[in-house]
Every structure is written in C-alpha cells, then in structure tokens.
Image (cartoon, rainbow, N blue to C red; front, side, top):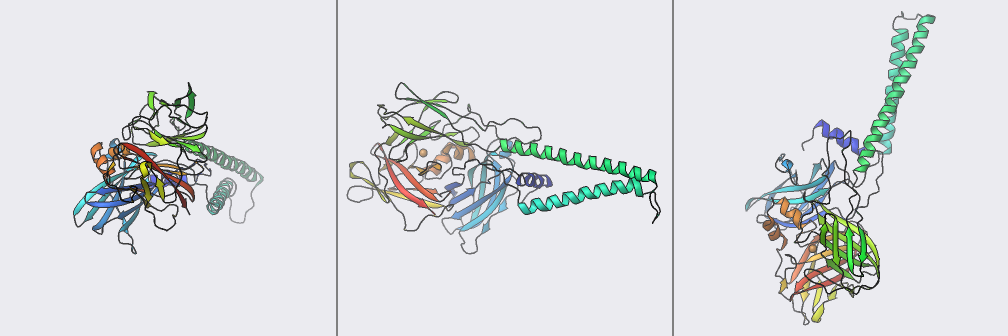
Length: 489
Ligand SMILES: [Cu+2]
C-alpha cells in the first residue's frame, strides 16, 4: 500500500469528523462480469462510504486457471489515468482458491477505475472496471477515541499552563524558597497569559475543525431530484437537478470532479434512460429515452398510462464516466399517450412472478433460481431463460440496445434502484472509458451472452428487503418485460 503521512492525516481528519450525514444510498456496490483476456471474472467493488477511504475488492475467477491477481486504482480520465501506482496483490482465499480479495485507498471523489492484472496458465491479461466514488456519509467519531483525545488535550493544556506559570514565577527561585510578592504577581500574569493562549487555541481549533467539517458535509453526495411536469396531456418535461455542484473551499487543495449538467455522454445509445414505475403496485413499467432539448432539460412523449402515482428514475452519465440516477415522484392523470417507438418499451399490466413470467404469444421467461435465499451484499448471477409455449428454450434473442438484456432491481418502497446489464451494474459508457475510450471493447464485454436463450445479470441486493426485478429482452423484433419478486435477508 502506498500511503504518505499526508494521506494518513487526511484520512484520519475525515474519519474523525463528528458529523452524521444522512444521505440516501441507492445501490453503490459495483458488480461486474467480464473478461481479462481469456480469464472470466466476477468482480465486486465496494466503494468507501467516505472518501478518502478504502474500497473493498472481491474477484472471483470462474475458471481455475488464475494464479495471481493484482489490483490498482486509477482515475478514469485525465493524467491520473496514466500515472499508475504499483499494484497491490489481491489475497487468494484459503478456503476458496478461485476467490481473490483486496482493498484500495480511494483518495478523492469522482470517477475511478480499478485495474485488475491477472496472471495464470494462459499468460497475463488485464481488465479495467469502473468505480464511481463519493462520500455518502461522514463517520461519527468513536466515543472511546473522543474521550481519549479530550483527556490528552486537557493534559496538554494543563501542562502548558503549568510550564508558563513555573517559568514566570518559580524559575528564579532557589529550592525551598517562597516567591516574593513581585514574583507571585508575575506568576499570576503568566497564568492569565497562559489561560488566554489555551482558550484561543481551543476556540481557533474548533473553528478550523467546524469549517473542515461543514466543507466536507457539503461534499457529501446527495441524490439529485429532477423536476418533472406534464405538458399538453402527454409531454413529459424533465429538468435535471445538480445538488452536488461543488465550489472551491478555502482549506481544500483537492477538488472532487465537478458535476455539471452540460457534459452528458450517451450510454448504450442514449443520453438518458428513464424508467417509469407505478407505485406502489409496480404493475406498470416503462424504459424510455427522453431527448435533450437543452443542457439539463429533457422531453419525452409518454405512452398510454393509467392514472396514478409514478416513480421516475433517470440514468445519465457524465463525461468523466461518473453515472447518476436522478429521481422524481409524479402523480399523473390518465395519459392518452402515443404508441411506443424506437427503443422505448414497457407495459402497464405486468404481473410479478416468483419464477415464471408470461410473455406475449405464450412465451415465458423463467428465472433459473436455486432455492437458496439471497443475502444482502452478496454477489449473485440472476439468470433468466426464455421458453416457447412448449417449454423449449428459444435461441433467437436479439440484442436490445446492443445488449442481451436489461434488468432493473427495485426495492418495493422505491428507494433502492439499479439498472443492470449482463456485464454488470456499471454504465456501458463508463466501461468504454475504462477500456481507453474503446467503445467496441466495452460492447464486446457487454453482449457476451447475446444470441443465447438465457440472459444473466451479476448483482447483489444492497440491503435486506423486498425487491422487484424487471427483465427486458428482445425477440421477434419486440421488447418483452418479465417481472419477478425477490427478497434479500
Ligand atoms: Cu439498460
């Protein structure tokens, strides 16, 4: 590990901040299914809750041909992307030789990637996995540490006062000699001066600490709430929110990536992927692609929609590869709407299934789930098979926006949302950036199970609770949506 004294000091400053943040965490962990050359890996990255902080890295080799794994963190873009520190060796698990784990310091907020260097029987190869890192909370100081520091601080203050008093009153005395009235007076003046110095140190120190703490609190990531409105009965207007736009602060040399709204890049072909879900029944679900009318403003013609409350989740990606989901809640009247066109797809009469979801034409989507229950925070492959009406697996799945499938994992209260692809929970645009702007490499990684009868998504539920999984595939030119009920413990 490469740590300077300054980084340790900075990390300690942040860890010790006596501030409790309450920012909402959606689903921050990264799940990624990809290939380092010939080696098939399932990667789980847990970004730190506070930056600077430690990201946990877990790499599972699907085959048994991997000998060593090394990991290192890099900025996604800019010169930091080229200044590679020495990699750390990931530790092979004693009980599970295909599992490698490690941890990496992430020093600034923003768009990162973790470079994974694999060596094995088929030579060496490399895989870059995007890692967005933000502070979502500040760690409160531990009570024990607080008491210890307070005790040490008081001891220092008492020592300082004692030294000044002794220096002004007792220094010129012989052993056993009592101070003259003039010396006693000097001593009292010394005591006063010492007290003023100590009090000033406490007051100024507290001001400095408070200023650092509030600067840090401002840098905590807040989920953006876009403004939504309905025009003319069926035109949805969205105005993006930027609560995390940072200003320079006096005491900080490091700046997080500035988040702006005029720097969006397309992710699998669209600047925005908007998911609209009816609440609380979640029977209506659409995956839409609003057009940008001007930076930060989007518009979409809505399909036919029943009256009710809807949650909106809009996925966007910044030029740094940093992804954001903007949210909104809307009460809509019945929308007479337009027929779905282009890549837009969805339906308002979905029935959640435990295992088998009905598709059109008697086709079915079958969740290939084991009987085990899901534990929060654990990576799993969610596999879905498409069958015809005779139960025969079909092998004619078509790519939908370049991918074998799209899945949305949504908690039933609407507070946890993740848009996942066969390659994982990272954005396609970030994958391309991580692989050096090579969109094709990213695409190849993305559609590695297109053309099969089965789609799989690597993901882990961030918290225990009830979820819905919306799975979209395309066949015979039509996008189909299956909905499944899931529970995490
Ligand atoms: Cu998608």
